[in-house]
Amino acid sequence: MMMHKQVFEALNWASSFLVDKGHEETAARIVMQHVLGTTYSGVMMHMYDELTSEQAEQFVALIEEHAGGRPVQYCIGSEEFYGRTFFVDESVLIPRPETEELVLGTINRVNKLFGQQRLKLADIGTGSGAIAISMKLECPELTVVATDLSAPALATAKKNAQALEADIDFRLGDLAAPLAGEKFDIVLSNPPYIALDEAQEMSSVVLEHEPHSALFAEEDGLMLYRKLSEQLPSLMNKPGLIGLEIGYTQGTAVANFFKNSFPQATVTVEKDINGKPRMVFCEIHA
Image (cartoon, rainbow, N blue to C red):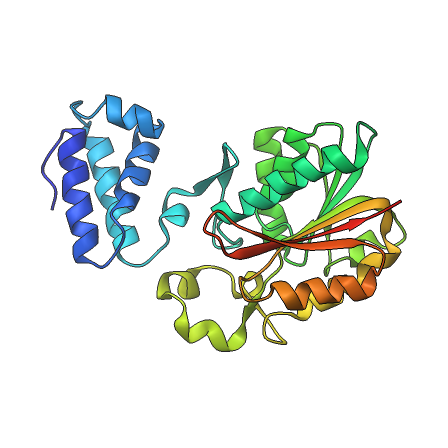
């Protein structure tokens, strides 16, 4: 048990404790940021501060909870995404850094494709609301609709929208069903895309805690892309933009779905910061 009271001593204890248990030591800093209510640089500046006994107890409890296998983001109840803090719990997938690249890639394309007109965006399968809320806050002129099949996920997304003061129209339902009869300029989605038979290769931390409905899809993980490619032609304005996050092996298959559904569009597969195919963009021309 940790008896040290200074921040750096607590971090040293936690790092070696987590490594011994087979976890990444970076979680120690994330938990310390949470306990101190500060940023990474804030922790660096307070390395020699004394922790109160309450802070020390909270720190130990959270480190032990994470060492027991619960993702650190669920332990502290939040994750950073596109420079903002989002509430997360077991009802939603933890937002990943790769998804920030989908937001950035969309913003870059929106400016080129549409100029300054008022646009309508849908985020299908919003989860924590990370994509929808980030788009609304980065491009306040957007009208944003977000859908999810999970009522608990939508409750978490609404909580995030309220906390971050983003005006989003949340709708419960499967894929594009809640959007029927409307037209959109931009549709984004980070759907479940892991093939069912890949489960055995995944870390137990993810498998035991993150919602399986947000991780796995049938047809080798491709079913929801196929369904979206069938549902979206009736919903898209011209010009229009579709942006999807994909599994790194799925670029060709997903691109082909959208080339078939939008034969006149420009469909591209884009790599993430690690050089892996991670996004498909479909630009529908006027």
